[in-house]
Image 1 (cartoon, one colour):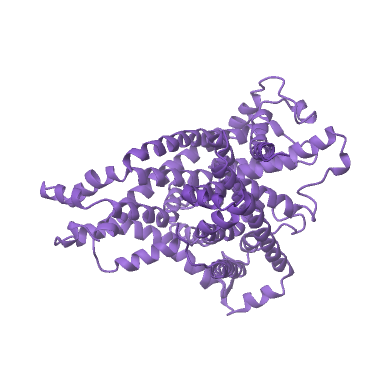
Image 2 (image 1 turned 90 degrees about the vertical axis):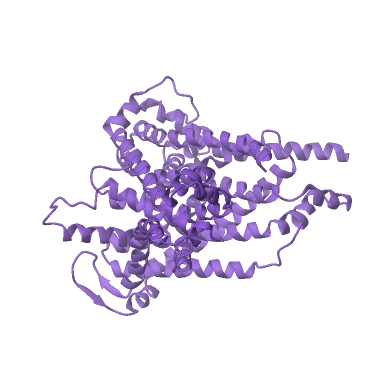
Length: 290
Length: 300
């Protein structure tokens, strides 16, 4: 073989290999999408057969019968609330850590840094027991309980567990912004609060976007905390899907499960496709900004 | 450096107001529970009854004789080693050919490979349960179609196979993430370095080991820590959603065993002792790996 043909076969092989790996990722996801519109009988034929038609009854079953519609809104509520909480408490904290000198600042920084290494999986049991304790203490006032099965409390816990990461990222970004803007605003008579919200916050938009995206994925995709803190009827989408999986094992009701999976996957895929585009545009724009 | 505001007087109330909400949440839902994990590991407690007894290190001593715990430990280590080696190898290889060979359609490949990183673990567990389904799953269904019934397996129900089935799911989930990380490291290596080594007659393979690997070494070390974390945590959520530790404890990992003890078995203190061991284990492994891979940082 000449070096030229050798290089070409090498290149062709590379394409085959990379394409095979990409297919190994894409095919299972696509397979679920197709399977979600199949009729019950079709699941017993060839797994590679395309759906005979759009059997949308699966989606009705999942949305209504398996309550995925209701769970969808719980997930949405918890995620949005969690994002609101985490941004509301982390932006001011990150700002003063970046810009003000106060006693105990290094202690706060070290504690938050250590918090980056605490994984939720370890501490969700103590959190659960603590909330049960609080409910027990309040049993005379609120006999129905307050802290367990409360989406608001769940989103507070979400916010709390992502404070270390969020503050860390925002602090670094605030530090990279020159102080000139704040000095100018202060000369114009802006208050501390106005400087933070009107001057610094708009400039921190790129970091804020990153933080919101990552936290969105973390909250939306979580199931361990949701499973523990919402044991009652009001579940999140991920926990609902887990229940569908268990139910399917008993009843072999594939269509409903696959439709449920698609309901969980699609919002995230759409968001991901949007970020991806933005990412590439951002890289192109980055050449101008430097 | 602190900005101009720091030197102005009377900033105390403002600083406090800004800091307090975040600190309260952080202390309440992260510091206190973490301290509780360590504290409770010295007690026996069912979790709900007021009956709580200090037993010192008894919980830890009991662990040594607990064969199920030992098995969960072995499974975690096995997953850690296999998944790290396979994912890292494949991720590096893919990243290298994507950046060096300038494949056409790179963005599409990257888009597809990164998809699993945005999916939830429950979804991944559901996808793989569908692939592995004994009768009508994609794998066994395909094998039946090809009349290769002899190769059909009970992917999640066979004690000898279940751990491998989990490992495949873990690699599938994280491959794209690590590839993107390595790609960003490799993208920062200047082209001249490669041109110079090409003039010296280095082949693409030789360049990979002599140029690429040393120059992204720090990048690699960081990901090793991520691998330790994900072997412990991702394996747990997958096990929890896919196998529940079965069949007969053969896919139990450390965190899933901790949960079983803490909830199902109501040995809360014992469960927390397992938590402490996992914590110490992942910390020590990360530290050792980081020590063992320390090199002088290379400059371009």
